[in-house]
Image (cartoon, rainbow, N blue to C red; front, side, top):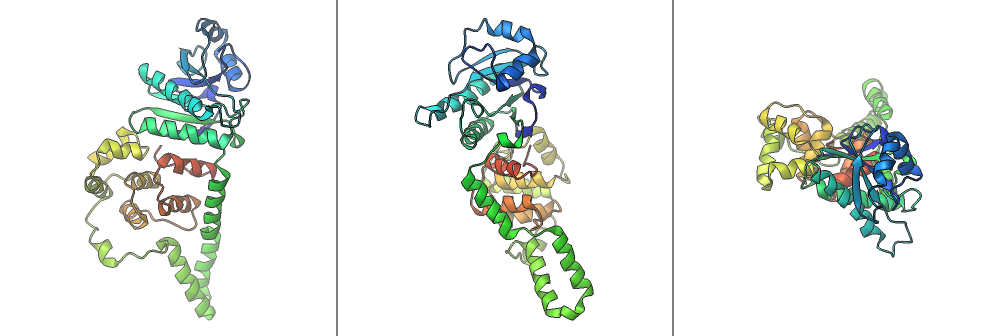
Length: 335
C-alpha cells in the first residue's frame, strides 16, 4: 500500500511486477527496455512477439522469466514534443493502466521507472510530478506497495522553484548540531560572557520550540494519554476512518493495526509525522503528537525543517513531501 522511492536497478527489484518503459513494438530497445529484456532472457522477447505491439499510454503484461519479478508490465510513454501534444495525459495513462493491470492480476507490489524521462525527453521534474500524482491517487483507494525506482540522483529532479524554496527555508533555519554543542559548552563553562550566554540559551531553546510556546497546563492535561490513544482520539475528532488515515499517512494497514491494538505502541518518528500529515495537524498539534511518542522537532535536523516547511505552507500531500525528502537525502514518511 505505501509508495516508496528507492535507488536501485529496476531489473533487481523484488516485486510482483516491474514496469518496462517500452517502445511501441515491445521488441526491446535501449535504456530500461533493453536492460529488462537482457535480464529476463530471450523468452521475454518471444512472448512479446505475440502481443502485437502496444499503443502510447496503454499497458500489456508478460511473465518475468529470469527476473526476480513474476511479471513485466510493458507500457509505452509519450515522446516529449514541448507539452502541447497531450503528453501529460498519455504519461498519466501509462501509470493508471499499469496499476489497473496489476490490480486485475491481484498483485501486491509493483515497481516503476520514471517513464519517458530518458531517451523520450520528458522533463524529469514534470515526469516525476505526473508519476507521484497518479500513484498517490491510486494508493488512497487501493492497497498495494508501489516502488518508484530511481537509478541515480540525476534521474530524480524536483522543480527548480520548489527545490530552491525548500533549500532557502533550510538555510534560514538549519543549525549544525556541532554548533549547538558549542553553545552548550559555552553555557556550562564560560560564565564570563553572561549576556551572550543568555542570548544563546534563548536561541537554543527556540530551536526545539520552533517559534511556538506550549503552556504547561496544556501539556499536563494530556500526560495520561499514550500516543496510540491520542492518535485514535484525533482520528475520531477529525471524523475520518482508519483506512483514510493510514492511506493518507502512506502506512501499511498491518502496522496501523498494531498501533490500534497496543496502547503502549512505540512508533518511529517518521511514522508519527506521517500520521500528523494524514490528519492535517498544525505545527503545535504535530509537536504534541510527537511528544506522546517521546520525540521533538529540532533545528539541527533537515528532515524536521522540511516537514515544518510543508506544514506551514498547508501542503499535506505525503507523496509530495516524500519527493522533497528524497531529493534532500532524508528518510521518507510512512513507507
